[in-house]
Amino acid sequence: MFSFFKKKAAEPVPVEPAAAIAEARRPWLDRLKAGLRRTGGSITQVFTGTRIDDALYEELEAALLQADAGLPATTHLLADLKRRVKDARATEPLAVKALLADAVADLLAPLHRPLQLGDAQPTVIMVAGVNGAGKTTSIGKLTRHLAEDGVKVLLAAADTFRAAAKEQLAVWADRNQVEIVSQEGGDPAAVSFDAVKAGQARGCEVVIADTAGRLPTQPHLMEELRKIRRTLGKAMDGAPHERLLVIDGNTGQNALAQVQAFDAVLDLTGLIVTKLDGTAKGGVLAAIALWSRGRPTPVPVYFIGVGEKLEDLETFDAREFAQALLT
Image 1 (cartoon, rainbow, N blue to C red):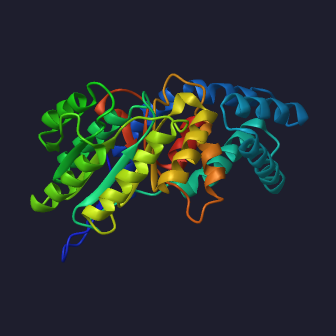
Image 2: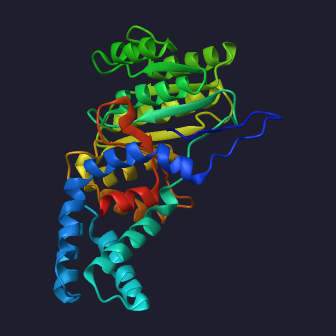
Image 3: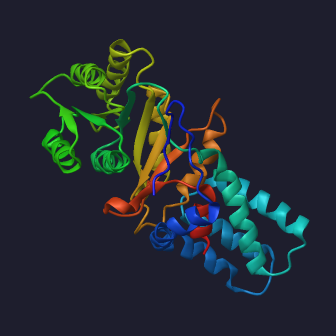
């Protein structure tokens, strides 16, 4: 159940009761818990003993590092946890686990912000990521959810480097019954420019540009990203309004390195984290959250994915994630 805040003049926005929202998200929370089982399992087993001592904290440190939280975030969480344990006068390991969930939720809280549409017509979303991260698939899933919500979407096949990338995006466009702008072997920036102009002419509410998959170590391709961003700005003032990076949760600390590298080029506005199922690397979100504190504004995690199905991509909720991680 995606939650988009789309501004419509003179229309009150209905507010769902918290209980109804929680119930609607219960199936997703169950999938998230299952997806994070490998990450959370190594952490929760630390709390199976009967004592709170140095050994418990040492095991927890090892578990967090194994989950790819990284040393800075692990150190931060342990210090925060010890403070909470002292303040709460906790005496049972299970109580410490609950306090750790609070510490994780608080660390991740700045990443919890929904994607907001409607400030610009169309809202132009530029999506980047390395090959294999699930970029085009995530675009397809996002498009499906938007289309089902009545949002008119146009896709730009600006990934002209990868074989079959245009065809893959075209399949999603056909499946979701949305329009697509593409060129045979065309320049990615030119395709993006044409898509924005087409989106404006056709009254589209969202234009999503699928850029070529690339590694941060490929300077010429990273420069192409800069060119696409500049070209989108020429096509429409203020575009791209969102600059999203798709990262593979399986890659652990390498995902953080990707975020830092792409942020230097694009000044990222949001993340999509995929493939959190089947991995013990889910702690990387803690590392991203701690790094994000050093920016003028945090980079939110708009969506996370735990599988290949449409419903396996959902909006990120810091408290949900912490609870699923430590269930």
